[in-house]
Length: 173
Image (cartoon, rainbow, N blue to C red; front, side, top):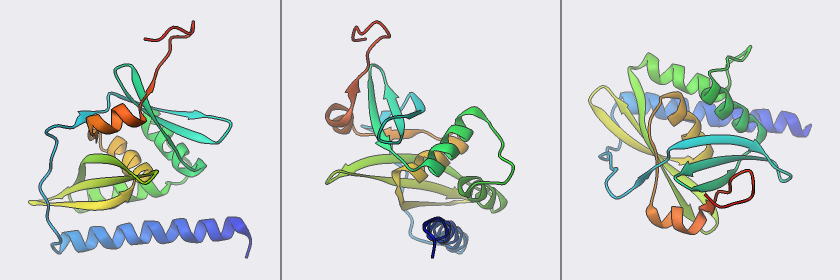
């Protein structure tokens, strides 16, 4: 099977898994309260190309946490940031549409780092029920942007993974 076909199948399975999670949420699922205290709110998100591949920068004050993502997710996040509409909906557009159809919304995404891999807790509110789903950080970022929900990190993550930003003339901010 060609590599691109495998990618499409895996990406489609991810979208279906999310859809089933939304449906189970509508029926009632594992509930967890929202939490924001003690966390740092991301002020700006950017998508850039690097020599390694697409990178999402989570910016707070003079620091940025770089998270490398695949090209499709980078395109989805960039589209959500700019309001760009694609000819056909991407997976995150589909997920947003499904959630909205069931009166759901993403209320926050909390990004963590464990053993060199970024994770996220994606909080979804549907009617009177709040659920937290384990998520890839890139998917949580994309959906949080689609819903204009806060993206949060711990101060420790910002200190350990955040890179100092520099002004165009090379001076630190």
